[in-house]
Image 1 (cartoon, rainbow, N blue to C red):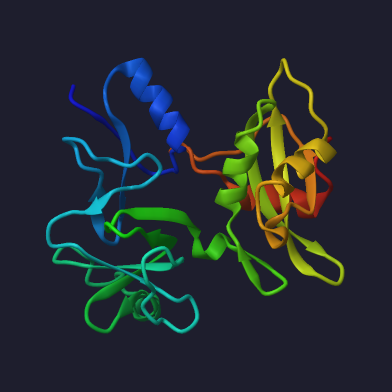
Image 2: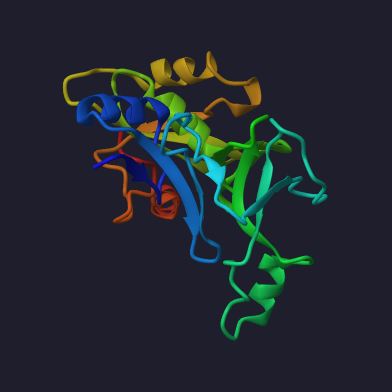
Length: 236
C-alpha cells in the first residue's frame, strides 16, 4: 500500500496527519462528483497539502466564481467551484430544467461547492452552497465552524445548522457531542468559537446531543438536525 485517499466527506488536516503517523503511509484528500467524476487528487509522490483536495487531474479545468455575479475570482477568494473537462456529464436524464441550472455556456458544470484556490492551484473546499448560512447578509460556512468546535478537547463531534432568530433571520447554531470523560458548558464553547472567528461568524446558540446523524459515507445529515430543531429544542 502506497497511500490512502479520502473522499465523500471532509477530512480535517490534523486528522490526516495523525492517521498518516499511525498507518505510516500518506493520507490525503481527493475530490469528485457524480456529475463530473473524480477531478482532483493530491500529488501521490509528495507535496500534498493537508486540508486541501489537491490539484486537478489531466484535462480537468477549474474556476472559482462569485456566487451572485458569476465573475471569476482570484487565488484566495471564496466562491463556487466550476469544472470543465471531457469526463463531465451531458446533463440529467429527462430533467431539462435541472440540466440548464447546472450546465453553463462553454461546457462548465456548477458543482454547488464553495471553495478557493491557492496561488499554486490547490483546491480548498469550504462547504456546499445550499448549506451556507446567511447571517445579516454574510455567508457563513457551517463546516468552518464545525472544524473550530472539533478543536476543543471536550468535543467528540459537532454540527452547525441555521436557526431563525427574531429580527436577525438565519443564525448559526452549534450541535455538539461531548466526550464521555470531559465536561464543558455551552457558554464555554460559544466563547471558544467567538475567539477564533470573525464576529459575524460567531455561534448564536449551542446545544448538546448524544449523536450527530451521519450518512453511510460520513456526511453530516444537517437536514435531520434542522427538522429536529423545528420540532423542538435539542436536548441539553
